[in-house]
Length: 475
Ligand SMILES: C=C(O[C@@H]1C=C(C(=O)O)C=C[C@H]1O)C(=O)O
Image 1 (cartoon, rainbow, N blue to C red):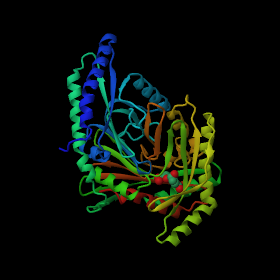
Image 2: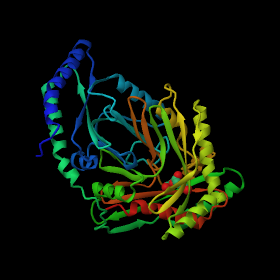
Image 3: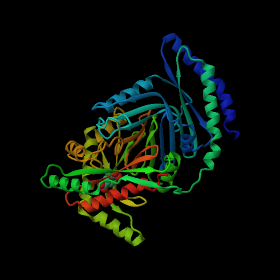
Image 4: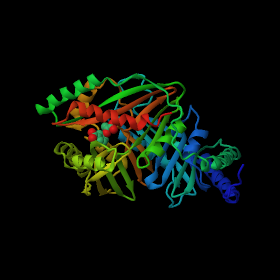
C-alpha cells in the first residue's frame, strides 16, 4: 500500500474526530435523538471514477459526476438518508427533505473549500410519475451519501456522513472511517495509472430493436400537422435504441470512454442500488449556482460536425443563419427568461454561440442571474424543467403529446440530474445523450425538436447522430 502524505494529519485528526463524535453522542443521549456527523478531510488525489469502480457495490446507490471544464469530479456512494418521491410536489418535498437532513447534521472539518460540505444527489424523472411499472428508477430519488469524494482543481476531499445515536460505538465508527480512508488512499495508484485512451476493443452489439424509423417519422409528420394548425409551436420527440452486448457492460470503461470522447460534456452515472445505471455525457446545463450566481443554457438547434474544417464551418454557418433553427432556439430562451422572472430573478441573456461537440453542434445561449437567498435551487429546477429544449411549447400540451407519441418511459432521460449543497450551490444538467444500462442490455435515448419547417428525414438523421454519443462509448 502506498504511504499517504496525508496520513500524519489523520493521526492528529484521529483524536479530534474521536472527541467530536463523543460530544455528538453525548448530545444524542441527553436529547434522545439521532444525528448525522459529517466529517470532512483533505486526502491524497484519487480518481473518483476509480472509486466508483472499486468501492461501489451493486446494492448501494451511487452517483458519479465529472466536469472536466470545471476541473471537478465527484463520486458519492451509499446513502445515510434517501427520499424516493413522485407527483407534482416532488421538488417541494425534495427541498424539505434536504432542509430536514441539514438540520440533523453536525459538522467536523467544514471549511470554505468547495466540496468540504455534504452534497445531496438528485435524479428527477422527466415526468412526475412513471407509467411503466417496472421502470428501474423511482420517479425521483434524492440522497445524502455515506461517502463522498470530490476532486476540484487537483485537490481531493472526503466527506463521510456517519449516523450517531445514543447506542453508537464511537470506536467502531472511527475504525470504519479509518479503514475506508486507507482503502481510498490505496487506490491512488490505480488512479494515476488509469489509461487515458479510448477503448473500443470489444464492441460487439446486437441492435435488438432499432428505433423504428418509420414510426418516428410518422410521429414527426403528425406533430407537424398539429403545429400547422397552431395546437402547439414545438414538440421534442425522442426514440430509443436497445442494444445487447455479448458480455455485461463495463460501467467503468464505458464512463472512461465517455470522458475521453466528450471532454466538454458533463459525464454522469446514477445507480439505483439494484444493478441498473443511468449514464451519459450531457452538453446541456439546466442550472449551476455558485455563490448565488446562476447560469443556465438555452441549447437547441442542431447540425452535424463537418468531416473537413470547410464542411464544418459551412454547417456551422447554415445553423447560425437558419430561420427554423433560430426559431427553435429562441423558444427556449423566451421560456427560460419568463420562468426565471416569475421567481423574481432578473435574467441576463449572454451572446449566442455554438456548442461544438465531437459529432454534432448546437445553438447555445447562456443566461445568467443572481439568486436571492430565499430562493432554493430546487424551486428554480421546478420552474425550468422541462424546458422547450426537451419538451416543447406550450409545455403542458407538449408533455401530454410526448406521452401519446412515445411508447417508452422517458424516466431519467432529458430530466434534471445533479447535486445541491448546504449553502445553496448546485449543478444540474439535463440527462440527454444518455443510456440505461442493465447487465448486458443498454437502452439509448435521443430526441429532436420539431417546429414548423422540420423535415422528418432530417430529424431522424439527427437522433441517429445523437445515439452515436453513447454507442461509441459503450463497452
Ligand atoms: C433532446 C435532445 O437534445 C436537445 C434537442 C436539441 C435540438 O433539437 O436541436 C438540441 C439539444 C438538446 O436540447 C437529445 O439529445 O436527446
